[in-house]
Length: 86
Image 1: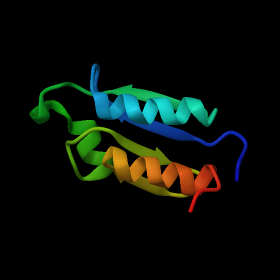
Image 2 (image 1 turned 60 degrees about the horizontal axis):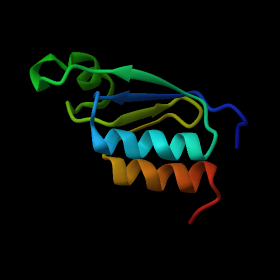
Image 3 (image 1 turned 180 degrees about the horizontal axis):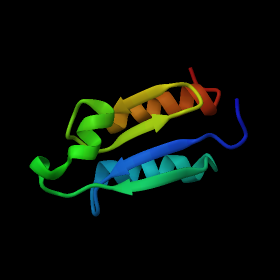
């Protein structure tokens, strides 16, 4: 486990699923960068390029090479990778 993971979170303003991921990252004291994407699906080119989807949230973890969408999957990944969860 790296003390300062290089995680980028692609998120929307006011998105409850994105905020769940933010809360987990902060509770785990993991450093991350936020990239806010447009609310309109057709304008989410940057998130489409990195993840293949236009849905948010998406994380890119350069420590592990993982790119992942869907808040539930992201929360599980963070627990397993950085929290010692199973």
